[in-house]
Structures are given as C-alpha cells and as structure tokens.
Image 1 (spheres, rainbow, N blue to C red):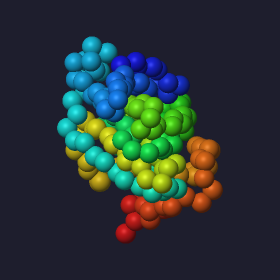
Image 2: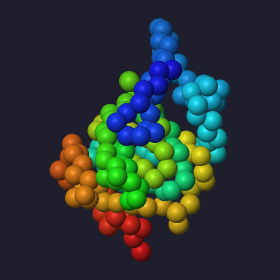
Image 3: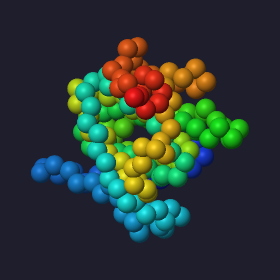
Image 4: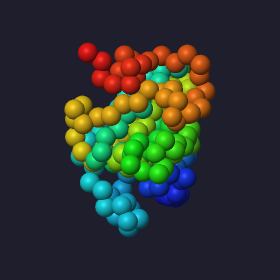
Length: 171
C-alpha cells in the first residue's frame, strides 16, 4: 500500500494495491500491522456505509476526537476534507479528492477535520472506519457552501439533508 502526505497536516492518501485477473479483483482495504508500521497505531471501533444517488452532497461533518479512514466501494465521489480547528492558523484550509471503485484510493481524516462528499455517479457507496463510536452530540456541521472555506464543488444545486442545508442538526 502506497501512503502519501497531502497538503493538510495529518491527512493521508492511501493507494492500496489491486490484484486483478480474469475473475475480477482483490483489494486489501485495511491492515492493522501496516498502519502500525507506518506510525499510525489507530484502533478502529466502528465501520459505516452511506449510499447516495447522483448529486447528493453530505457534510461537512466531523468531531474533535475521531480519526476516519474513508473509501469508495461503489461508484465515484468527490471528497472534501476541511481543517475545522478554529484555533488553528490553518482553519478553513481544504483539499479535494476523487475516490472511486476504480482507483480504490482511501483518505485518512484526523480529528477536528470535517468531511463532505458529493456523489458523482448514479449510485455511490461511501465507507469509513472510525476510531470512536458515533455520537451525534459531539458532531459539528458546517454548510457545504460556507463562505469562509470557499470550497469548489462540481455541482450548482446539490441534493441536501436539512442538517446540511442548515449547518447543524435540524429539529
């Protein structure tokens, strides 16, 4: 597995090896020993999957303590990672990645970073491993078009939840 640094501190791009033959393909998405050797002794405790249709945009969500390893199992999506640490000089800095079932790239997202994703294909399956159990009371949410971030999204009118329209959990 190839691991590369990104422009955001502690955000890493993983490029797993893909074995292909006449039967299909095989990909190892996670290996605890490999992470430990890379200086990432993270313990993942929960896996989640989100399925979306084209133009659905989810996020920007995060919390203060959770590391997330994001993968695309089906389709193709545009992933944005934003530094949401308001005490950091890098607050608001963001980087975008295209993850797909073809490139099999993964992104490791540290705490205090929000992420949002936009479905670029008819159907996507967004997978992530996390180091803490999901706790909605600890989540932060920013709107996808927060002017402080000036994020470029490849869509003008995304399909949004009430939470993502409001930038908070809606009542």
